[in-house]
Image (cartoon, rainbow, N blue to C red; front, side, top):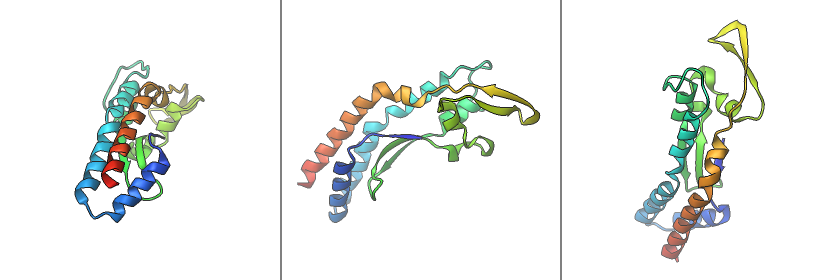
Length: 157
């Protein structure tokens, strides 16, 4: 699950121009500025994860701790998928929890065995956290990314 914060056409055009240029400093500055523009969103998502209700409280070893650790910022400036993404990556979750980021965010309830005991199952409600955390901060980050795109466009021209 991720949220894209770029104008895809402009970002692809700038990426193409940067590939044609042989100025490593401008390329490095572009990636650094994009990362800095989106970096404040990661703590917002992690804070929203910690606010998910739990009867046991927050534990770095539990579900919310694993979700928080799996939250990453990705900046890609090459290829068709050039962009900035905040991602709660299921691949970074423990082996038995890989599908949980989307299940916890989902709109439906889900069932799971209690501590791996397949004889005892519980139904758990989802607690959307991702999009609600970014809804307020998204426009600010989008403006910051657009400022970076404008600045690099001026440098390229």
